Image (cartoon, rainbow, N blue to C red; front, side, top):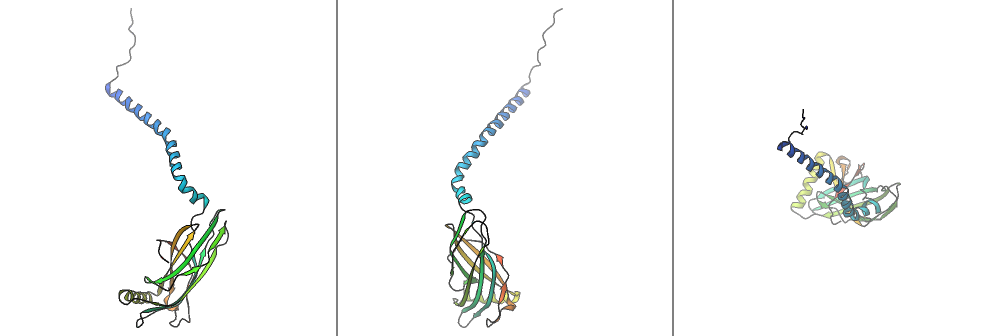
Length: 221
């Protein structure tokens, strides 16, 4: 009695298509796994020239901190269209971490109120630090009268003074410009002073307890 050999069942076209898709997917996954390290290497080669100086050769810029500030006088003379002001602030620059030298040059600070600059910017001594440690402070003071153009600017200052007195706080902005390790960095510091503590003759001072400044768009200080 003869026996016929066992033949595999015929493969349906649908099953063959599924296997082809599985093979294609497996080949694509293997190709992606091989190309991934190459893509990472190319990204490193492209970005390294710009990232290494920032990450390794010098620390990131240091954001100043207002350690303390005093406001002795802030008023508007409508007849002369001038702002009379007297204030001071102490800026603190914490030392950056790392072993690299950090230099802060071209350090300038200028106050403003309601968009009106109060006097000229004050140039402060530069700072050079290496490694971690105590921060450096720089004190600045501004006092005098600032002419305000009559019209819209004068009305804006008058309205701001009335609003701040009603709220109970004067908001004075101090712009800080620096060049840190050759890169320009500007900051804005908003100081809040209790309005009730400011005497009209400058005999008493309102105190700002301190606060960190924020990055600002480059401006002329």
